[in-house]
Image 1 (spheres, rainbow, N blue to C red):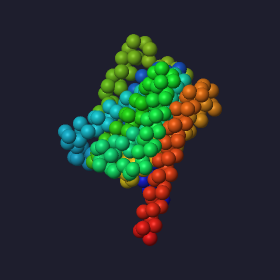
Image 2: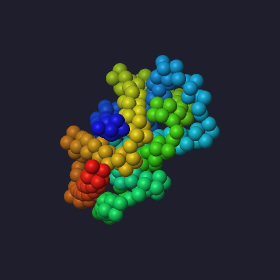
Image 3: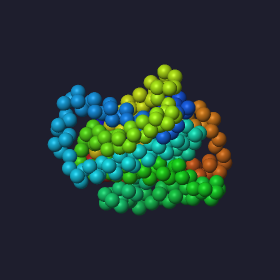
Image 4: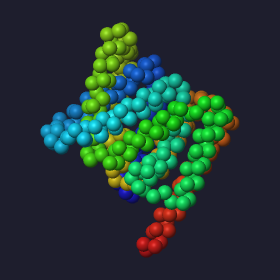
Length: 293
């Protein structure tokens, strides 16, 4: 199996179980959890570079254009993290799963628009079905599924930036977290100064889990960054169904979130879109393999 595919599967599996980790931090405000993810990720990545003696190598290849590119990636990542963390600790795990169910098709469209990856005729069917699912949820629930839409869009754009970014996974992620480190640290210091900071004032387990947000954040991101550079963006989108399926099961079975008939219809259309997308990709791959043979 392609190494990029293995990296992607591992990343999406870890992300699928991440809501369980975040639920253990539900007493900490979402903004603080997100800031801790940035700060401890920066600390961990910097330690890795220092241990490998690659700091000078990274500094030597940086340019203003590259910094702007990775600042965009870091900003998209920060927004995605914040919305995801808030949704999980607020009891909307099922809706986060919808965002990542939609994201594969967002990735396909972004690849088509920005990378000129052609969309085959039958691939328009799953795109249409997913769109119908989102419209149904909007009409039946009275409001757009904004959590899902924000997560799908920000992570799709993040994947696009990583696809065209020049640095490898470790260097790229280090630059991203470095560029958003100071705002995150400043926010945590401000929270501490106003007496509402959680770190150091919570129980030992909560403090430890906040520190470990760096490790549980960096591991799947490095795998994702490595995978997205090795395989087409459309393939990354196809594999991503692993993560939302695990999140959906966690939301319904572990956390007891409601799943109404209206939601079921909307989700059903999106799932049907992913099935159609998967079948079309398999048939296309099989046809291409037969011709090559």
